[in-house]
Image: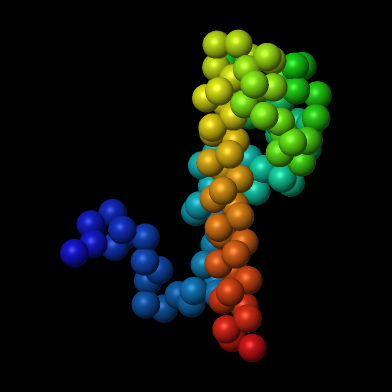
Length: 108
C-alpha cells in the first residue's frame, strides 16, 4: 500500500499529467537538469555545499566530465559528497528525460 506522502504527489482529478508542473521535482532554485547549469548556477550549488565557487569556473556540462577525485582535489573535505550530489541530480534528470521521451512516443 502506498504511503500517504506518495498519494499526496498524485495530481488532483481535474489536472492532466501532461500539464504537471515539473518544478515540483526541483530541490532548490537551480534548474532540474545540472547539464543546463551555467557558471553562476554551478558556483551557487558549490558554495551552498561548503565549497569555494571560484574552484569550479565551469558550467554543468563540464562537471559531467569530472571524477570523484577531481571534485576532492578542489574541495578536500566535501569533494566526494559534492560529486555524489551532482551524480544523483544528473541521474534524476536523465531518468525524467527518459520517462518524458517514453511518454511522448506512446502518445503518438
